[in-house]
Amino acid sequence: SSLSRDAKSGREEVELAMASLESDGVTLQRRRDQIVKEQNKFTDIRDNMLKVLLEKGSEAGNNAKKLCEKLMKQISQLGGEPALQASAPSVLLKKPEERQGFDSHVLEAVEAVLQSRLDSIQKSLDEVDSEGKAREPDVATKREEVSQAKAKCEDLKSQLDAAEEVACDKEVAVVATNTLLEESEKTMQEMAQKIDAACAEVLAFEEVLAIFKDLEERSNVVSEKAVELVEHLVPAEAQTVS
Image 1 (tube, rainbow, N blue to C red):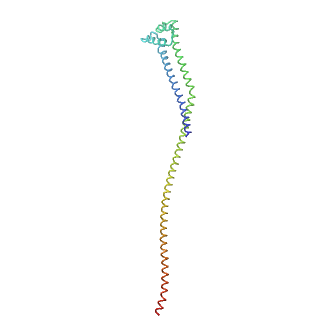
Image 2: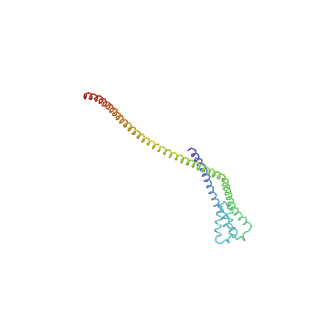
Image 3: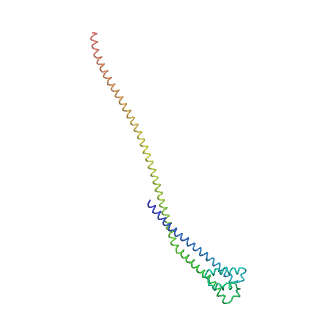
């Protein structure tokens, strides 16, 4: 029915809107995952490279030089000043107690480059989280609309199923009635044939009865004439005798 089609169309529209929102949500989650991955990367660089070199310097063991090279590669990629890139390795590889006043400025500059990147990442992460939070009411509303649309469709489907069941029952009843009428008509035809046969038998009997009546009437006439003849002859015979 048109009502069912309208309900189905409405549900499909809401579901499409919901699918679009969910797709946006998946895209947003992927962005967040990428940002978190990058955040973890630079947090690891800060905690397991820079801090180790700050606290131990050359005493970080055989890996000290490799750690310093990896760290400076990241500082370069992050746009560290050439002067910083030139001076930082030697300062980082000093023992902590050998570092002097200016060295602390170099180390603070290296920390600032990394922290700036981490702050930028955190800002991006906060923006994504804010966007996700802002979407929550709309997503919840669409989910409720989808739920209501589905419930409406299910209700209409139940009504249609019930109507079809009633229609089916009526159709069965019509078929049964037609069958009964056909059987009744057949019975009436058979009865009519029997009545016709009985009428024919009655007519035949009446014809036979008429013949018997005619014979009876004729027999009575003959009898009367015979009596008259006898009565006529008897006196004549008496006269002859005398």
